[in-house]
Length: 208
Image (cartoon, rainbow, N blue to C red):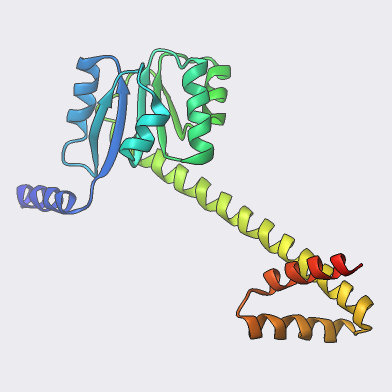
């Protein structure tokens, strides 16, 4: 029964789309151990590069689901690349490094590293580390999107309020009348209320 369960679990993993990993490691033996540790998991090392490769170019070209870096010490160039990647093409990033000082760890996390692990990748722990990094990345991206949506809603509300005030002043309308006028224009043109308000503000300011 136990063997059948293991086979069923393995079959389920194989039928699931694997998450591709771009692994950056200069040590062939070490990278081979990590690749072996990820067999029959939802992760697959699809590309292996050395630390001298152009990270941004390769991520853009290969489009991995995750980036794993095993390095003695992250230098400024790699941290700058990770920061740019995090800003424009965010990916879950796991870094294994010999550096244990808090400054290096802090700089790495601020550069977009989802999980910073001191020491070599332990084959027995690597899957759990990748799982944790992926979960942390997804949570962060979700919160980031929620904040962006909230900011956009507040900005849209300000624009609509400005358009209402201009209508009230220029057309001698009440607040309720101004809002209904904006909403009617949006319905008639098939535009968002925010976009109608922007156009109206531009037109009324030009007339002034």
